[in-house]
Length: 403
Image 1 (cartoon, rainbow, N blue to C red):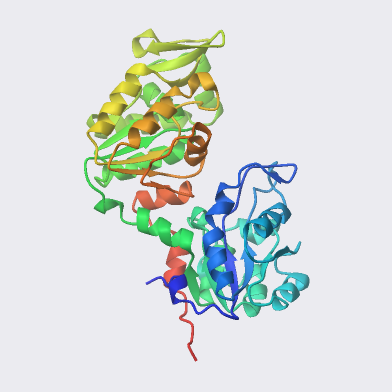
Image 2 (spheres, rainbow, N blue to C red; image 1 turned 60 degrees about the vertical axis):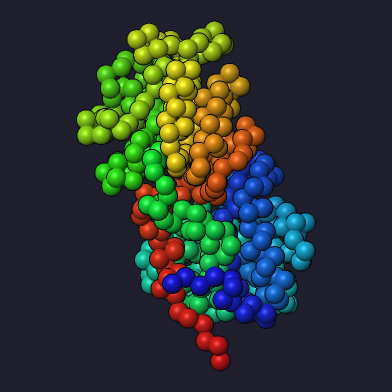
């Protein structure tokens, strides 16, 4: 059983809180604060109860343009919270540990980007993770640990699984809410439809295979680059422009996987009946029979596909969406994503996997879903019935002594 903040007597307690505030950044300026906003209730709850809070988080990946310090994140929280927030440019060094020890009740400290240290970009079992420098040096100056980083909880990195091996540990409000919404997909009403789009083809096919094999999905709808892969797998020649995108992104082998899924579960999989291509800067819709379009890139699903998928939603009791239907960032090709997402809001239970899907919703201004997750990979892991390593670590954490 996982303990929550309701089980924690926080006053005077030094709490290490892992959050996921990984956000688009340009020149160390935050471009989207939605993930930061999600953690405000957890941090406010702890600080209001008199905890001394040390925040752990990551930003970007090594070598990426958004691989940055957490200084801007700390400044954002200093403005957003009702309590003082400071920042230290170390994660587990002496300066960081001394800053944690100097915290007063109701004060918050942001530690430096955990991924500045190579161990955090590796995965371990909890016992080994507890031996890493990050955990072994920080744990002695913490009393308890709180995981509020649902979006990263499908990983077995030290900051996620190491602390629960040695400290009493709790779920924050974000993690608690996500587990309640996504942790028991089998209990949602049927018919149950999975709409899988976007450009992360391998992950989408993993989900499709799992939910079809386990009987979790009555129907799988494919769109985006995922839909193009299914079109190719069905024998449709997309043309050079669209085929080259599949090959250049390393998804050639995924065509065979999609073909195997169609052979095994073809009556439960729907893929685009038509596509919208860019021709001379304009949106042009082509039926499957009109393909190939050698010089024109498929950028969205077409009207017939939108109508067919909307009909499936109308007959569904639960719809789970992950990934946009097309290149929604281009106004000429946002129609499929917008209209399908809007149709999904009318389904009694509508669940959105986070990541790129949530970003699309915010850009298009679509809301009204039952639940929009803060995490893409973590959400899909739960929605396919697999456990989250960081959540399993919480389940095995030591219990805090009340004496």
